[in-house]
Length: 225
Image (spheres, one colour):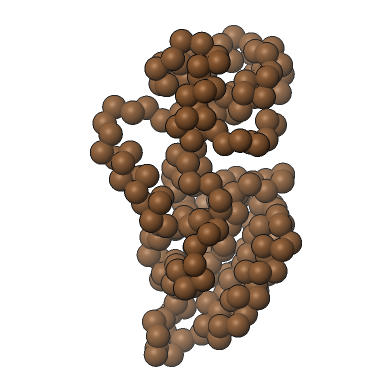
Protein backbone atom coordinates (compact mmCIF):
# COMPACT_ATOMS: atom_id res chain seq x y z
CA UNK A 1 0.00 0.00 0.00
CA UNK A 2 1.27 3.41 -0.91
CA UNK A 3 2.02 5.92 1.80
CA UNK A 4 -0.35 8.83 2.45
CA UNK A 5 0.26 11.67 0.08
CA UNK A 6 0.67 9.52 -3.03
CA UNK A 7 0.78 11.58 -6.18
CA UNK A 8 -1.99 11.87 -8.79
CA UNK A 9 -2.88 8.55 -10.30
CA UNK A 10 -1.23 6.56 -7.49
CA UNK A 11 -3.35 4.28 -5.31
CA UNK A 12 -3.24 5.06 -1.62
CA UNK A 13 -5.34 5.85 1.43
CA UNK A 14 -6.60 9.39 1.94
CA UNK A 15 -4.42 11.74 3.96
CA UNK A 16 -5.79 11.95 7.49
CA UNK A 17 -6.02 15.61 8.44
CA UNK A 18 -6.50 17.42 11.74
CA UNK A 19 -7.42 21.12 11.55
CA UNK A 20 -6.45 23.38 14.47
CA UNK A 21 -7.71 26.98 14.38
CA UNK A 22 -9.58 29.08 16.93
CA UNK A 23 -11.95 30.57 14.32
CA UNK A 24 -14.96 28.29 13.58
CA UNK A 25 -15.48 29.87 10.14
CA UNK A 26 -11.88 29.08 9.16
CA UNK A 27 -12.19 25.49 10.43
CA UNK A 28 -15.46 25.00 8.58
CA UNK A 29 -14.03 26.44 5.38
CA UNK A 30 -10.93 24.28 5.46
CA UNK A 31 -12.88 21.17 6.45
CA UNK A 32 -15.32 21.66 3.60
CA UNK A 33 -12.55 22.28 1.11
CA UNK A 34 -10.66 19.10 1.98
CA UNK A 35 -13.83 17.01 2.34
CA UNK A 36 -14.60 17.67 -1.33
CA UNK A 37 -11.34 15.95 -2.35
CA UNK A 38 -11.29 12.13 -2.01
CA UNK A 39 -7.55 12.30 -1.34
CA UNK A 40 -8.17 13.73 2.12
CA UNK A 41 -10.08 12.76 5.24
CA UNK A 42 -10.65 15.36 7.97
CA UNK A 43 -10.53 13.26 11.13
CA UNK A 44 -10.85 16.07 13.66
CA UNK A 45 -10.92 19.77 14.48
CA UNK A 46 -9.44 21.71 17.40
CA UNK A 47 -9.96 25.29 18.59
CA UNK A 48 -6.76 25.51 20.66
CA UNK A 49 -3.33 23.94 20.95
CA UNK A 50 -4.09 21.71 23.92
CA UNK A 51 -7.03 20.12 22.10
CA UNK A 52 -4.89 19.69 18.99
CA UNK A 53 -2.23 17.83 20.98
CA UNK A 54 -4.85 15.61 22.65
CA UNK A 55 -6.61 14.78 19.37
CA UNK A 56 -3.28 14.12 17.64
CA UNK A 57 -2.63 11.38 20.21
CA UNK A 58 -6.11 9.91 19.84
CA UNK A 59 -6.66 10.19 16.08
CA UNK A 60 -3.11 9.77 14.73
CA UNK A 61 -3.51 12.16 11.77
CA UNK A 62 -0.95 12.24 9.00
CA UNK A 63 -0.94 16.04 8.85
CA UNK A 64 -2.03 18.76 11.28
CA UNK A 65 -2.95 22.16 9.84
CA UNK A 66 -1.94 24.40 12.75
CA UNK A 67 -2.78 28.05 13.36
CA UNK A 68 -0.28 29.91 15.57
CA UNK A 69 -2.44 32.40 17.45
CA UNK A 70 -4.84 30.36 19.59
CA UNK A 71 -6.05 30.76 23.19
CA UNK A 72 -4.38 28.86 25.99
CA UNK A 73 -1.68 26.70 24.42
CA UNK A 74 -0.84 28.41 21.13
CA UNK A 75 0.39 26.78 17.95
CA UNK A 76 4.06 27.10 18.86
CA UNK A 77 3.43 25.51 22.25
CA UNK A 78 1.47 22.72 20.59
CA UNK A 79 4.34 22.11 18.15
CA UNK A 80 6.77 21.86 21.06
CA UNK A 81 4.50 19.47 22.98
CA UNK A 82 3.90 17.26 19.93
CA UNK A 83 7.66 16.96 19.43
CA UNK A 84 8.12 16.13 23.12
CA UNK A 85 5.54 13.37 22.84
CA UNK A 86 7.18 11.96 19.73
CA UNK A 87 4.16 12.55 17.50
CA UNK A 88 4.63 11.29 13.94
CA UNK A 89 2.12 13.78 12.51
CA UNK A 90 3.51 16.36 10.12
CA UNK A 91 2.58 19.87 11.20
CA UNK A 92 1.86 22.44 8.51
CA UNK A 93 1.52 25.92 9.98
CA UNK A 94 -1.30 27.92 8.36
CA UNK A 95 -1.37 31.50 9.62
CA UNK A 96 -1.66 35.16 8.64
CA UNK A 97 1.76 36.01 10.14
CA UNK A 98 4.94 35.85 8.06
CA UNK A 99 7.36 37.74 10.34
CA UNK A 100 10.61 36.38 11.78
CA UNK A 101 9.04 36.29 15.23
CA UNK A 102 6.67 33.56 14.04
CA UNK A 103 8.37 31.80 11.14
CA UNK A 104 11.71 30.91 12.74
CA UNK A 105 10.40 29.61 16.09
CA UNK A 106 7.78 27.49 14.31
CA UNK A 107 10.34 25.87 12.01
CA UNK A 108 12.77 25.38 14.88
CA UNK A 109 9.98 23.73 16.89
CA UNK A 110 9.49 21.13 14.16
CA UNK A 111 6.95 22.46 11.67
CA UNK A 112 7.18 20.63 8.33
CA UNK A 113 5.91 23.68 6.49
CA UNK A 114 4.68 27.24 6.83
CA UNK A 115 1.87 28.64 4.69
CA UNK A 116 -0.13 31.85 4.76
CA UNK A 117 -3.92 31.80 4.89
CA UNK A 118 -4.20 33.69 1.62
CA UNK A 119 -2.64 30.73 -0.23
CA UNK A 120 -4.72 29.55 -3.22
CA UNK A 121 -6.68 26.32 -2.77
CA UNK A 122 -4.49 24.37 -5.20
CA UNK A 123 -1.33 25.47 -3.38
CA UNK A 124 -2.77 24.41 -0.02
CA UNK A 125 -3.76 20.97 -1.33
CA UNK A 126 -0.29 20.45 -2.82
CA UNK A 127 1.31 21.60 0.41
CA UNK A 128 -0.62 19.12 2.54
CA UNK A 129 0.25 16.28 0.15
CA UNK A 130 3.91 17.29 0.27
CA UNK A 131 3.84 17.56 4.06
CA UNK A 132 2.34 14.07 4.29
CA UNK A 133 5.35 12.80 2.34
CA UNK A 134 7.65 14.58 4.79
CA UNK A 135 8.69 17.30 2.38
CA UNK A 136 9.31 20.83 3.65
CA UNK A 137 6.85 23.41 2.37
CA UNK A 138 7.18 27.20 2.52
CA UNK A 139 4.91 29.82 0.99
CA UNK A 140 6.83 32.12 -1.41
CA UNK A 141 6.82 35.17 0.95
CA UNK A 142 8.15 33.04 3.82
CA UNK A 143 10.83 31.45 1.63
CA UNK A 144 11.93 34.91 0.48
CA UNK A 145 12.12 36.14 4.08
CA UNK A 146 14.23 33.16 5.18
CA UNK A 147 16.58 33.51 2.22
CA UNK A 148 17.05 37.18 3.02
CA UNK A 149 17.82 36.36 6.62
CA UNK A 150 20.38 33.70 5.68
CA UNK A 151 22.07 36.19 3.34
CA UNK A 152 22.32 38.83 6.10
CA UNK A 153 25.20 37.74 8.35
CA UNK A 154 25.59 38.96 11.89
CA UNK A 155 21.89 39.50 12.56
CA UNK A 156 21.07 38.31 16.07
CA UNK A 157 17.51 37.02 16.41
CA UNK A 158 15.23 38.29 19.15
CA UNK A 159 14.47 35.44 21.58
CA UNK A 160 10.93 34.42 22.45
CA UNK A 161 11.28 35.89 25.95
CA UNK A 162 12.63 39.15 24.54
CA UNK A 163 9.66 39.28 22.18
CA UNK A 164 7.30 38.85 25.14
CA UNK A 165 9.04 41.75 26.89
CA UNK A 166 8.75 43.85 23.73
CA UNK A 167 5.03 43.12 23.38
CA UNK A 168 4.35 44.19 26.95
CA UNK A 169 6.49 47.32 26.61
CA UNK A 170 4.69 48.19 23.37
CA UNK A 171 1.38 47.85 25.23
CA UNK A 172 2.56 50.51 27.70
CA UNK A 173 3.64 48.34 30.62
CA UNK A 174 6.40 49.59 32.92
CA UNK A 175 9.41 47.40 33.78
CA UNK A 176 7.75 46.49 37.08
CA UNK A 177 4.45 45.60 35.40
CA UNK A 178 6.27 43.59 32.71
CA UNK A 179 8.18 41.68 35.40
CA UNK A 180 4.95 40.87 37.23
CA UNK A 181 3.23 39.68 34.04
CA UNK A 182 6.12 37.41 33.07
CA UNK A 183 6.88 36.25 36.63
CA UNK A 184 10.49 37.44 36.45
CA UNK A 185 12.45 40.10 38.32
CA UNK A 186 12.56 43.76 37.30
CA UNK A 187 16.33 43.42 36.93
CA UNK A 188 15.81 40.59 34.44
CA UNK A 189 13.45 42.79 32.43
CA UNK A 190 16.13 45.49 32.27
CA UNK A 191 18.68 42.90 31.13
CA UNK A 192 16.33 41.76 28.35
CA UNK A 193 15.76 45.35 27.28
CA UNK A 194 19.48 46.04 27.06
CA UNK A 195 19.89 42.92 24.92
CA UNK A 196 17.00 44.05 22.71
CA UNK A 197 18.52 47.51 22.29
CA UNK A 198 21.79 45.96 21.18
CA UNK A 199 20.16 43.61 18.68
CA UNK A 200 17.95 46.31 17.19
CA UNK A 201 20.61 49.02 17.22
CA UNK A 202 18.58 51.44 19.35
CA UNK A 203 19.07 53.17 22.71
CA UNK A 204 15.66 53.42 24.35
CA UNK A 205 12.26 51.76 24.79
CA UNK A 206 10.36 53.92 22.29
CA UNK A 207 12.94 53.35 19.57
CA UNK A 208 12.99 49.61 20.30
CA UNK A 209 9.22 49.36 19.90
CA UNK A 210 9.27 51.43 16.70
CA UNK A 211 12.08 49.34 15.20
CA UNK A 212 10.35 46.10 16.21
CA UNK A 213 7.22 47.14 14.31
CA UNK A 214 9.37 48.27 11.39
CA UNK A 215 11.05 44.87 11.18
CA UNK A 216 7.79 42.98 11.55
CA UNK A 217 8.75 41.53 14.94
CA UNK A 218 5.61 43.05 16.37
CA UNK A 219 2.30 43.31 14.54
CA UNK A 220 -0.54 45.74 15.25
CA UNK A 221 -3.03 44.22 17.65
CA UNK A 222 -0.56 41.70 19.15
CA UNK A 223 -1.88 40.45 22.52
CA UNK A 224 0.13 41.73 25.44
CA UNK A 225 -0.31 38.76 27.68
